[in-house]
Image (cartoon, rainbow, N blue to C red):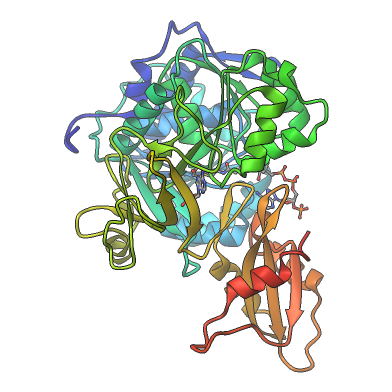
Length: 507
Ligand code: MLC
Ligand code: AMP
């Protein structure tokens, strides 16, 4: 596919829609929405955005609770050739301030209960429009769009045009906007539909948030690209998942979803009577979880590996052997190589940095050409920052990270961002943030803090100060106070030493 070829993600979905009266989505309350609802409601919102004067390429930022209407908004933005910018609902006003300033959207859509606070924020950063969309689908956006036509000619975008801007934090503490094109998304989703055997008979249990690649592009994408349906839960609640699983053929989740299911003593094979496939990703799935899940249900969880920057890169096979502790093979069209420190290709021997190349890989970071250049090799491979190895049969395992990052319940936390905030607190000399193993979240964020002489500060005070500034999942679950941080001869803080020391004390 050339970057100039005409392509729109929505049009690619639309070509695979079944008869429009077919049910696309059923909520836990039993309300259902058809493909016609998706087509008509997204058309109305797209018309409304254009009526307001928004243009192709404009960013539309959305910090909205999960609802079918939030899905229509995403489809509308893509149809109109605008750029969808999803935001974690846990982000604080301070975090939003950065995102709005950086992405410079033409519109922010938020929950009504946040609109007053965000009105002032929009004014201060110059975001022209603020609309609301609530968990029940109400709010000014849908209300306004209702008078618009249900017909809309999807924009004739090119493969290289941006469809989405998704932020991830960085090792410097400054989040980066990842530019994803229509081509990136169509290519990756089409490959997944084939590789995982999606079809019209599939019903996917959707409990993931829709502000990340996993829930938004992978899970919803596979369904819309194959004409299947969604069992739509507004969050992951284990009891509700168990009630809905018997109606579902596929479930996708982060490892915490599977460990939480296994904690339920009455979760068993009966819940999985219709399910043909369980997919896990976004964080490492422990071999123990894989084994226990198979013992309990007879299903071998299919683990895959991806990133916001690349979509999905590797996957265990649908039909061949799925191996615990591995993320399988490179997906069709994705080139994967493992390289040593001097960028030499390891040819299957030993652990090295994982690099990927393919039309799934993003075009760069928003307004950060220098960072973009740093993260690509001269021959166009993206340096993922993950450490991997490959066994003799070609199965790849992710064994570590060269980037300082914690993944907690499938959400990434960059220690630097939190350390900078802790260091600003009065009485703090310095701090180190690390991830420690946790049976529920996989890893949890923990802070190790050195106070200045005579300062008194409690762990709860540190946590309280952080809660006011960053999303909850980034707030350290524990705070340890020490006289000094362990350092090597070069003065570099030894996080591995701390992980060993505090590993047993964290949970
Ligand atoms: C919530 N909390 C978390 C947390 N989620 N803390 C650490 N890590 C998390 N992931 C906070 C809550 O705010 C609360 O704080 C306390 O921890 C307990 O919350 P909980 O009720 O147990 O959490 P819950 O609401 O059930 O959420 C947990 C979760 C959720 C695992 C269900 O985080 C989730 O759905 N995660 C999926 C994330 C995801 O989609 N990742 C994909 C990224 S895309 P307090 O202070 O109130 O007690 C990607 C690419 C790829 O990575 O390859 O897919
Ligand atoms: P994100 O920035 O949220 O897209 O997270 C991407 C990161 O999640 C990757 O770089 C990996 O470190 C991690 N990741 C995703 N899937 C897996 C997996 N199956 N096993 C281990 N790590 C994973």
